[in-house]
Amino acid sequence: MNVGGPALQVTGLVEGMNRRRFDHRLLTGSVGSGETDYVELRAPSLPLTRVSGLGRAPQPLDDLRALRLLHREMRAFRPHIVHTHTAKAGVLGRVAARAAGVPALVHTFHGHLLHGYFSPAVTRGVVQVERTLARTTTRLVAVGARVRDDLLDAGIGRPSQYAVVPPGIALPDPPSKEAARVALDLPQHAPLVVLVARLTTIKRPERFLDVARLLADRHPEAIFAVVGEGELLPALREQAGPNVRFLGWRADVEVVYAASDLVVLTSDNEGMPVSLIEAALCGVPAVATRVGSVAEVVIDGKSGLLAEADAEDLARKVDAVLSDAELRKRLAAGALGHGTASFSRARLVADTEELYEQIAAEKGLPRP
Image (cartoon, rainbow, N blue to C red; front, side):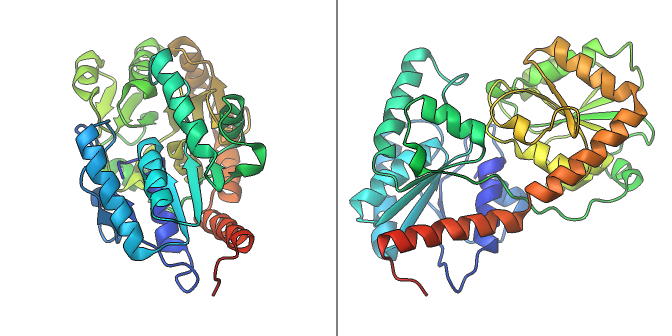
């Protein structure tokens, strides 16, 4: 449950689904070094069971212990459906569920590991594992159509297995821009460009620093703020210019977006980034790399601008938005409209409940 899309979606489902129809148990591991626990930061009252040994990095002895604990929990609870999220938990959770005789398995791909994460040899191994697991998974859920299509192109699952369920988010009402700037100790009238991300290689946060450097002369008053932490943070602090601020992880992300004029995403690979959805729900336009299902969140020219995965093109698009107040206003209105219509938590909960009901009907599971 590190800070990011999967934790946010799981929290929304646990808190939002109809408890008279669905009885939950949330099993989760521990975050790695350099990561922040979403539960501790933003959902301390979320009911969950910690599974010792379950973590992001492969550790054979820990993984075996986690597999045994997952199997034991499932045998005790006897669920009709096990729904896994993220790659590592998806493997261990589905293996444990099959061993425990669970009737139906669901796995959500919040993105994929098909490029940008591992060497070609390791990637081929990951793909083969996912192909094998898909054969015995009842439903495969993708957060976006592009993510689904990439997985199908890799031979993972069949089209009939897939459901596209975009993220759904509920945020507290954002404060005024003036109050948000005060809370973040930022000047009231400087343009604020924000990156919200886990500071790891696939997110390419160094590109954000390059954008700040490329635009320092053209927009000398602009502030480029990094919201997040991770293993790259020390190196990024050393590389950053005077127009860059580091704000760390914040539980009150709505304050960050309320203070912002523009959100930037610099990743090489994504599913459907929740930072862009959160920004849209607060009426903040985005400049983002054209990867994964980003184009399903940022409608190019209407709610933001899409760029190639290089600092120069990102800088050109950021410059265009910062230099044109009317463009910025139009994109902000488009972002709010698209975000509100497409990415509510209520829609996520309704889509997931419908998916479970379909599985229950197909499998002849008992229904309240």
